[in-house]
Each structure stands twice: as structure tokens, then as C-alpha cells.
Image 1 (cartoon, rainbow, N blue to C red):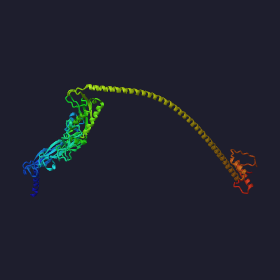
Image 2: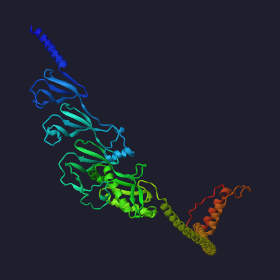
Image 3: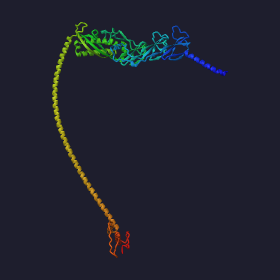
Image 4: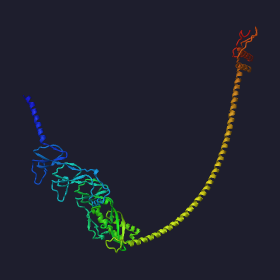
Length: 586
């Protein structure tokens, strides 16, 4: 019976487990999409204190600080509720859409000088975080750190990326990142922090007052503005160190970055139209009214960019407070020492431009502004009797000055022409002298060439004669050596013949001594040389001596040798004796 119940119980357990899993799957499952997050809301627990919107301690009822990221989660629907909120996305931008401006239009230049110029394109952004809930921050403190737990603007910001933040606790504001292109630097100003340790330095209020500019030392009435010193890191104010070209993630609620273009710029005072006339006007030493168009080439060194922004705010402040007023004052102070005709004369006008440039450079150098050149482009001389605002030019003065200069130039021209004619005559004379000198040099050259050639021929003949003499001497020596060689060779040959003959004679003498006598040697020689080619047999009849002529030579010689030895010595010869056979003698 128990064996039958065990499978039934196991099946019931599996069914119950599947039912529980199905209930949990369909009722407790929470799915958060990939671009969303889930804010948890606790339905039961300790009530929140009055005025508190988000639970700060475990077990409190209401919105919780923790959020669930994308994915699948399981929560008890009786205890928890949730809300789907989008994730916080900080764009990274697209560098391909960035527009770098290298040549500004007038509108771009005005915006850049005012310090509010922005470049086009999808640039990276940063997220400024404001904490809505937390401890009350100390009075006067606007920016707090994230670890402090205070409510307010956080000093830390969000860089490009995706973040899982509770929108009930944090508020995100998107701001463009600081992008500094090539040709610019960024001047950083701390908006919060401790006060600077150094007191403000007095500065000169440089406005349109012509009596207060152009002086090297300010008086008590001019010291009406105070320039704060540059701040150190952590202090409130403008920092000395500037940002080089690049991308920076800076909290705009904490620091302000002002873009300033470095290098040289152009500032002109000229006449745009009949109603817009910005030319510099001042009286001359002789009372004539002078109007000049002036162009100043000036620039900002990156090392002094922070000081300029700290004192003037932007580039427009440099033009409005320094260059423009100082230029008007310098032109009035220096120009009033020149006569009207000096502005028409080229040399004096160049001198006026040089003095104006040097004085402007000296004053602007004290304000950390670099002035390269101030160029006077156009000058108008007006009669002192002309009505104010009239543009009538004193043509008589210009005509008189021009005629005097023309006369002077004509006189100078004639002098130059006379000098040129004199120089031309001298040149012709010098040319003739050069031709004479050239012919003289040619004749002398021909003589020298002939002498050198004759000397060379003489040396060549002497060399040939010496060579022939040397050859004859050598040939004589060769003939002598050849005669000696012939004599030596003839003597050697004679000696060879003599020695050969002596050797043969000695050989014959030895043979003769060996044979015993000269007759024996003769017979031997005869026998050696005897070579009969044919033999004739002659029959003389019975009783006649006959012999075989083929052996007659040997027999006769042997017999003669035996007789000679027998008669000379009793010693017997070694030659064999050949007996006569019966056939040889009868």
C-alpha cells in the first residue's frame, strides 16, 4: 500500500512545485527593458517623516533609493510596487560633425571677442547632477560633494555614458562639454571657493576720457577700478593656468571657461559710411584738422590670457578699454607736434607712424597686450576754417606741397640725369680702356704662346736627340754583349769538338791497347765494316785451297790476331781459336 502512495506523493509534490513556480513567474516577475530602470516603491513599512519623499532607511514605506537595472527580477507584489523610468544617457557626440572655424566672419569675430562664441556640431555633453533629497546643506554652500549626503548641486558630474539613477532623487541637466579648438585657449574661472589671499590691485579706468589715457603713471582720480588678482586652485576667481586645445569635462556650475583666440588680430579705425566715421581726428601743429585711418595688429600671448580675461572680461574689453582709447590719445599727443605738410610728406608720415607704434607698444605691454604694428593708411588734411562735420579737403595746401615736392623731385631728377650722363661717359671711356687692355692682353698672350711653343719644340728636339744617343749607346752595348756571346758560344763549341775528339781518340787508343796493336785494331775495324752483299764461288780444281767466303773474315782476323799475340807475348789471347775443318783445307 505504501509503495503505491510514494509515486502519488512524488507526483503531487512536482505538481505543487510547478504551480508555485507558475504563480511566481507570472505574478512576481519584473522585466526591465535595456533602456529603462525600475524605481522600487515599498507598500508597507514604517511611514516616512513629514516632508520626506524618499525612504532613507531600510524598512521605510515609499520610494526607495535603490533602483533595478535592465534585466529580469523577482519581487513580492504584496510588498513591492515599481515604476519604469528611462536610463540617464549622456551623449558622447560625433567628431565627424564638428565644425572648426579657421577664418571668422564679422559675426563670428564679434561673438568670439564677446566671449560667447560656440562652434557647430554634435559635441560631447556632461550631466550636472542635483540631489533633491538629503541633509540640509550649510548656509552659503551651493555646490556639495556626493559623499557629503547634502542636497544641492553635486561637484561631480556625469561624463558621456549610460547611468542608472533614481529620477526622484537626482535631477540631471545636460550641458555641452568644453571643447577648445586649435588656435584658442580656455581661461578657467572658479565660481565658488575661498576668497583670494591677495588684496585687489588698483587698475586704470581706461574709457573714452582722452585726458586720462596715454600717460605712463596714473593719478589719484584715475585709480577708480580694482582688478582682483589671479586665484590659486581652490580659490574663487580666474586661474592663471589656461586650458590647451582639447576636450574637457568641466562642471559649468562650478567653473566657467572662456574661449579666447590667441595670435594676432586686426583693429581698424576708418570710415565705413557717411554716418559711420571712426577715423582718428586731431589738430596739427599749424591748426589744420587731420583725419587718419589707422589699423593696429595686436595679439594675446597664451601666458597672459588669464590676466587679460581677469582684468577686461573678454577681447572686446581690450579694444574698448585699452587699444581704442590709447590709440586716440597717442595720435592726439604725437600728431599735434607735426605740421600739416608733414602728414603729406612721406618721410615725416613714416616717422609719425613709427612714434605712434612705439608708444602704443609701450603702453599695451604694461597690460600684457602684444602690439605688432600700427599702420597709418589714409590721411586727410582739412582747413581750420571748414565747418564742423564738413569733408572738404584743403586742395590748395596739398597742391602747393605737391608742386613743391614735384619741383624738388624734378631738380633731383635732373641732377640724377646729369650724374647718369657723366657716369655713362665714364662708362664708355672705361669700355674703350677695357677694349685696349683686352687687345694688349691678346697680343701679349700670342707672344707668350709662341715663346712657350718654341721652347717646347726645342725641349722636344733635345729630348729626341738624347733619346737617340741613349738608343745608340744601348745598341753598342748590345753589340758588344752579342760579340761576347758569339765568342763564348764558339769557344764552347770548339771545346765540345775538342773534347769529343779527345774522347774518341782516347776510345780508339783504349781499343788499340785492348786489341794489342794497331794492325789488330785495323783488322777489327775492317771486319766490323765489311758487309759483303754477294759471294762468288770459283772452282780451281782438285788440290786447290778454297774456303767459305762468308766465314773468311772471321777466320782471317782470328788467325792474324793469334799470330800477333804469339809473337808479342807468351800470354794467350782470350779470343777463341777456330780450327780449320777438313772442308776448309785440303
